[in-house]
Image (cartoon, rainbow, N blue to C red; front, side, top):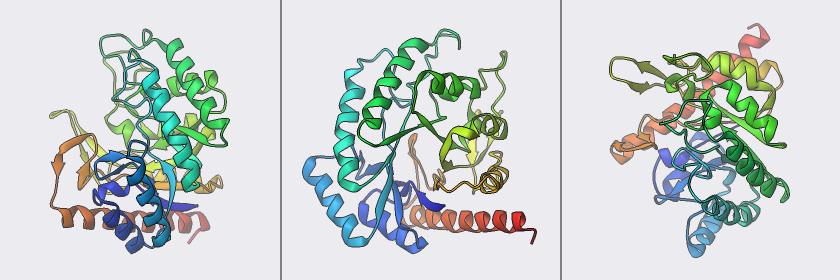
Length: 295
């Protein structure tokens, strides 16, 4: 088991991301944005500089937090766009020795009901992407975010059924603000614990996020791990009980919210919040271990 995180929430530049990781005593970063661009979209020279900087710092990239088929991509968009992203990512993953890459299953079509989401085309595209990575010895993991598979645990299982070889990264915080479209309308928000228990046999990686949904404002108030409605402590304990040996990747959303660039704090506050989040989560993991040991 290892700890890692979306270090772009500590700072936009790689120096700051490495500094935060080293202050936490960690060896890994889940790479998403560096200087405002996703790692698979950097210019070649900039990417090579990233590789050299990481190597000199002794920090590794355990997962590419790609934008492939994510909530910003429509199933009606040309598939060539996703294929190009995958083709750029593969050699870069090999260059960095990174095996995992986060992908999704395209944005939910908001003007259509759950049963009319072009699922066959989604299955086809995600299957092609999955096979591209598997053929190169790399493992794609699907995240339960604002996409087809994130509409509820039944949709994730249908996706896995139709996309052989695909595995899951489970995000503890996304269900807090996501409609459960596996239930009749008006859709309630999802239960992180319910979602997790139905898909946990397929989970090989975990994103740690937490928060509380405010129905009056229609917004999520993000919290430190274990202080919200994401069932973080219960899920972590269950994973450890089951012998989970993968990564826990923090995605605080406290100092910087990736989905909303207007939510920013001063640079040092952003940095300190990320480090504090990492420290608190590390303590939470240890407390879960102790509870299992009966201490």
